[in-house]
Image 1 (cartoon, rainbow, N blue to C red):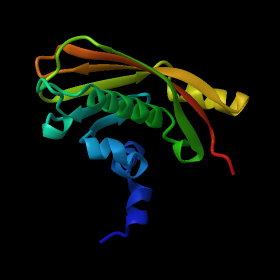
Image 2 (image 1 turned 120 degrees about the vertical axis):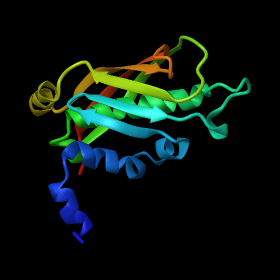
Image 3 (image 1 turned 180 degrees about the vertical axis):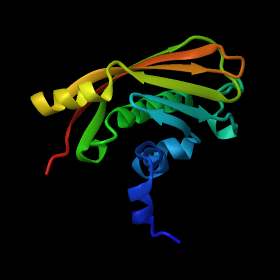
Image 4 (image 1 turned 90 degrees about the horizontal axis):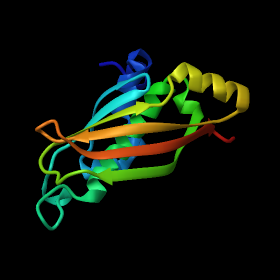
Length: 160
């Protein structure tokens, strides 16, 4: 058996980000958010409906859907900055959410950064920080958009 640190050294950086969601954002895991896919500036996440995520009319609770979207956006940020993410401090600065229709069942969130990782890393290198938007589309099992979100992220190097 390979020790965990050795496994992480050989692990794809996007898989490593997925594996560490529970440690980095325990609330998202507690809510039931599952990261499905992460690439440079994109991520998809899933939330199954269960009693703990329901509202009073047996749909997905607004807070659960917000958590799904915010977690997907954070994963997209981590994917964009994968080579340096462990040295960065990403903070969600502003979030906008529009509930488009009643949402039930399993939901899939797709998040996309407004700029690719190389551009973001270049700006951090030059200016010492960056700010950018991530758009999120949350769809139901019928592939209908139920929520639209935008999160503005501020990223700077970790303070020592």
